[in-house]
Image 1 (cartoon, rainbow, N blue to C red):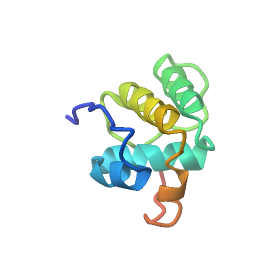
Image 2 (cartoon, rainbow, N blue to C red):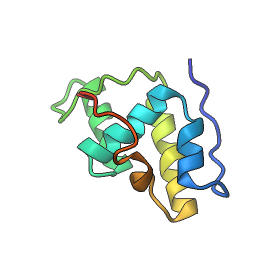
Image 3 (cartoon, one colour):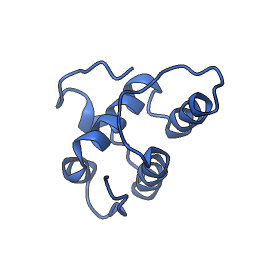
Image 4 (cartoon, one colour):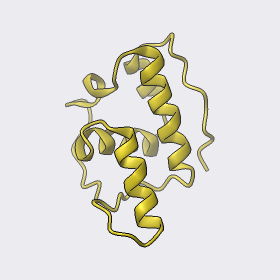
Length: 98
């Protein structure tokens, strides 16, 4: 299990992204790619899927505490005032995240 950690807003997005577990990195890329970087939309989609309601994407990211991670990632971006977007564009190969 990946422990949800505090993300240090003093560090630039590239440094934080590089320290994240691979599955959490995939969650960042999926949110950027599928939800246009909107953490709330991704979280809502995950909640809807779990509740058996219609949802947009079934992510193949296996993080048991994914909603907590989404909250931490959103808080980091808000504190930093800078998204992860620039760090995830072409640095990682595209994967089917649905």
